[in-house]
Length: 213
Image 1 (cartoon, rainbow, N blue to C red):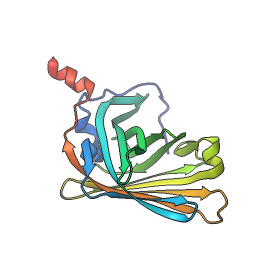
Image 2: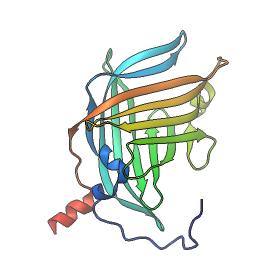
Image 3: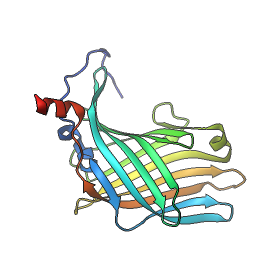
Image 4: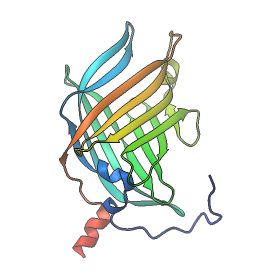
């Protein structure tokens, strides 16, 4: 990967994030599943399957710069409920980012159990499939966890595959490879779901401001 000598000069961004999201444009909006998603996670007796319902909101943000590097993106929040209980099963926030100049896609994620990660991949604007990954120990696209998670349920890798379906829905398969304390073999923790749009996105703040003008 090569970078320019001038690391300070910024590009002039477009105020319209939705028009510049590349393949991420298909993710913008509010989504829910129709059939339940499936989570396979480790328990003392072995793998446990949980069915769940999910609602995820992905809203455009104003363009962001690292000097000459320019991102357009979506801020997201997902809340997942297991079908057999009322408390939140999984809560997650972060960003999906697209760099038009290089095709770089980034997903950042933060989980309120003491874990964050940055996953990356590459895509073209017309692509109907995205694959992003992160590795424990990487200082660029890596995974960081609390001392307890490192001790008991260490995440070695993260991989998400998103497929945009012809009917406008999108599906994902999310794999995290865990080293569970006391077990010799790694455990593949897998989530999968298909989501359907229930509401359109709100334009990013700068776009709303430009419309008022």
